[in-house]
Length: 168
Image (cartoon, rainbow, N blue to C red; front, side, top):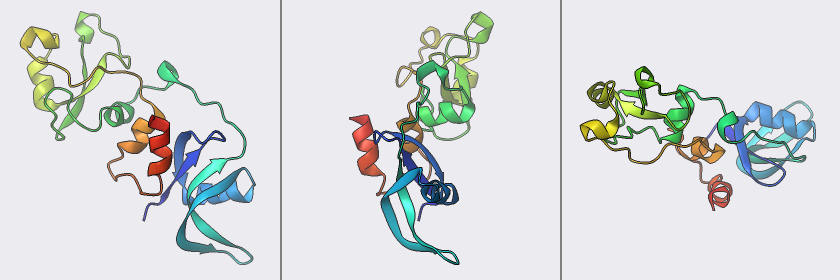
């Protein structure tokens, strides 16, 4: 049973996840509504609430897009599906600059990818095509759906209809 709740914007666009506790607070403040509830019931002294699985905010929240998202190790790993972009390995993952910083490469979404330690060491300060390595896909700024659909814990079935609508 997932402990995270999928949060949708007023337009039904997935924007984040939050804890069950935070979701209940949003519900009690009338800032959100339950779209999908679990079988479990949460009880308080004067209140009984169905445990939320998916909630929708009642007012639209503007979400930053593209390059404005902060680049972090977690974000790059999630965007790349927790796989090395050179060989597909899921072990000993690191980050690699496609154009090495020693050659003037910047730390931006289009230049940083997930790499396993052996591939990162093999590539070193070279460009991938110089040593016969190729990327599985072209790096880009991540979307919210990248974070949700590539969670190491999997996607709960109650979330799938809302995530597939966002991808389409």
